[in-house]
Each structure stands twice: as structure tokens, then as C-alpha cells.
Image 1 (tube, protein in one colour):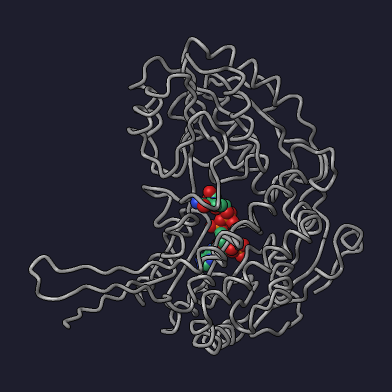
Image 2: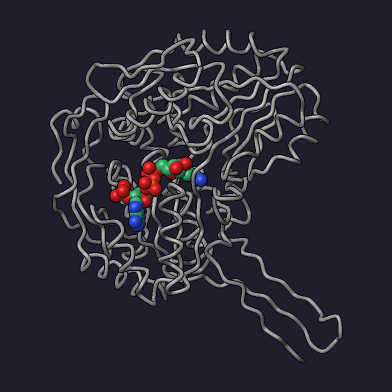
Length: 487
Ligand code: NAP
């Protein structure tokens, strides 16, 4: 792996991990370029795995599987705990790496590292509490004993928008459950994954328990791994489109799948909401990671009586944000991940404007170097515009006016997605009643941020299958085994 000179000034050289990580060995190489999204300049070049590398990774995960499964839960827990501690000790270097390769503002990157490390702490705790069950059959014929066993080798595929947290949210429960894993991070942000693998090594993760591969051929490499009968689990976080392709591929060998896919979160503000609280929440729900989050508020439905004040307040706040490279400590809104991402946002905004929307701030890509799109507020957006149906994944807040609770619910549910939703109202009874009718896996009530390692994260409809985090997250990597016992 090579690093651009600029890079070494920003990150701890000890975390410049090299190339593929297979069976506890590092294999340097090249083929995948990592760019600084704030300039488009080269940051680093990392290895491009071949099918043979992927097969070696499955071999390594298989060789380590029996030992890891037999390792006492307390010992697995302590390794995860040490990994949590090392991430915490290296928080600033990891945050800088994330800000460099992903572009997000340092404050967001620091938040991500803390959130990511918490998955290791939480699953260090959960590793020692794997549930079992004992029941009598209603007929009295025998007894039911239920154990939970590790599912087997797990392939973990993660996106670029949370390069640390999406990996720990899978590795934590998988290792706690007793599975060995192969992580394939996104090509745009491999450096964080490799740096974390280096810390895992230091924490005492045995060779082969965690393997990391980067590839420019994710489809071919993943299909090869899924076709190997030793691989029993696929845990994917990414777009709904790729999720559908992977579900079809996994079906060929009936591999167990957990899917954390795209979102199109409605953010509903009722007339009786606390306006300042709703604006604070809106800024978090929209602007964490400059809008590049699956939980990002994608559609703001604001009741007629509070609509104009909300638009004015949101416009003022969005206008005041400082745009710049993520690694500049002053930055509040960093670049988008790629030029393509900017093009997509531009298309959605241009179509909305052509259909009658008005930009109260922003509305056009910035022309300087790097992949920047300014914080933008749109009002008077037609409810059927493509910006209401597709994930924006950028700093754009389209606002729609509504009159009644029923109308808000109908609009909120008018999407194939069902990951996250937000409601602001001083009337908790009303918020709960409306919330019950919203088709979503997660609902923030008077809160713009819901992610927490102790809570079940995931979606309904085409936003996914399964949950990560919480007490059930570990069961995504376990299979119940039923013993019918007569004694
Ligand atoms: P993406 O294009 O679906 O890519 C996600 C991962 O899948 C990357 O590692 C990518 O590798 C890999 N990939 C792409 N095509 C593949 C294939 N045919 N077979 C196997 N792997 C393949 O998504 P993204 O643009 O990185 O991330 C943004 C999306 O993720 C958004 O839709 C967002 O909502 C969603 N997301 C969901 C959650 C959640 O928890 N529900 C959390 C975060 C993000 P390459 O990088 O090499 O292409």
C-alpha cells in the first residue's frame, strides 16, 4: 500500500496498515486508489484482492473457526473489550483517517469513532449473556431445550459512509457469537478498516478470526465466497439495489442474510412542536455526515401553521454552516464522497426546481476543487418529485406542507423504504398514535438522532432484513438448535 505524502501528516503511521489482511498476515499490493474527496487528489493505493485471495480468506476463517467457537465467552469478551479500549486510545487518529478518506467533518468523524467503539464494548458484554431456553411441551411428551450456536463463517460487506461503525456493528456481534469473519469494506474508504484490523491484532484477535479484503470486483469476489459451502452468513450494509442482487446470489446456496439497506426518512413537524427543538433535531437528522446517512431526514413534512417559521429557521441554520475539507477542524459540512454523488444530488435538486420548488439557500453544486454541494433548503416541492422517492444522500432538505395527521401519515408511508422516521410534537400521545401508523423500523420522537449500540437498528419494507445492535443483534450470527429431550 502506498500513501500520499499529505496523508502522513494527519494520521498515526502505526495505523498505516498494509494491504489485505488474511489469516493474521498482511499482504501488500496495489490496484485500488483512495482519493481525498475534498480535492480529488490521490491519498493512498491499496491492494485489489483476486478470487484466489478470497478463497484464502475463507480458508483462513475456516481454519480459525473451531478454535474461536470453542474459546470461552469470557475470553472472546475480553478481546473485544481490549479492541474497544484500543479504538478509544486511538480515537483521534481514526477520526482523522475517516475525515481524510470519507470527507466528513472531524466532529462527525469523532462521533463515529466513539459510536463504533461502543459496539465492541456492548458485544464484549453481550458475549457472556448468550441466551438459552428450557420449556415443557404442552402435551407433556418431552422437554424443549434451545441452545444458540454460531452460524459459521460470515462475509461482512460495508459502505463508505460510516467506515468504522458499519464494520464494528457487524464484527462485534459476530465475534461475540463465536463466528469468524471476512470483511469487505467499501473501495472508497478501506484505510479505516485496515487500521481497525491492526488494532484488532494488537487486542489479541487470533489469526484468521477477522480477515479484511479490498477489491475492485466486489460482485465476482462476493459470489465466489457465497458459493463456498463453508460460508453460512452474509451481513450487508449498503444500497437497496445491491442488497437485492446479493439476496438473489445468497439464495443459490441458501446463505443466511442480514440486510441493512437504504432509507427515505420522513421528518414530521406538527404545529404544536417546540420550534427550536425541531430545528435542532432537523439539523442533526439532516446534516450528520453532511446528509450521507441512511437515517438522514430525506423529506420534511411540516404542518401549515408552523411551516413558514420552520423554513426560515432551517434556512438560517443551513446557510451558516462552514463548508470545507473534513479534516479542517472548522468545517461543519464536508465534501460528498464522489463527483457522481454530487451529480446525483444536482439531478434531484434540478428536477425539483424545474417542477416548481424554490431554493431558499443553496441549490447548485459548488465549482471549486473537490466534491462539494452546499447546504440547501427547498420549499414548495411537489410531493411526487423524484427527490421525494430517492435517497438524496447529501445536504439537501426538501420541505413539504401538510394539513392533517392522516395526510402526514399517508405521505410518510408513500415509499418503498422503511428505515427511520422522525416526529416532533409536544403532545406525546399524538406522536405515539401517529408513530404507530408509520411504517418504519426506527422512530425518533422529539429526537434527531436514534443510533445507539444498545438499540435494535434496522428497517422494514425494502430497507432491510434483521437488526444490528441491541440484545438481539448477536442472534443474527447464531442459529437456534432445539434438543427434544426425554428424561
Ligand atoms: P453500495 O453501493 O450498495 O455499496 C455497499 C458495499 O457493497 C460496498 O462495499 C460495495 O463495494 C459493495 N458492493 C457493491 N456492489 C456489490 C456486489 N455486486 N456484490 C458485493 N458487494 C458489492 O452502497 P454505498 O453507496 O457504499 O452506501 C450507501 C448506501 O448504504 C445507501 O443506500 C445507504 O442508505 C445505505 N446504508 C444503510 C445503512 C443501514 O444501516 N441501513 C447504513 C449505512 C448505509 P465497492 O465500494 O467496492 O463498490
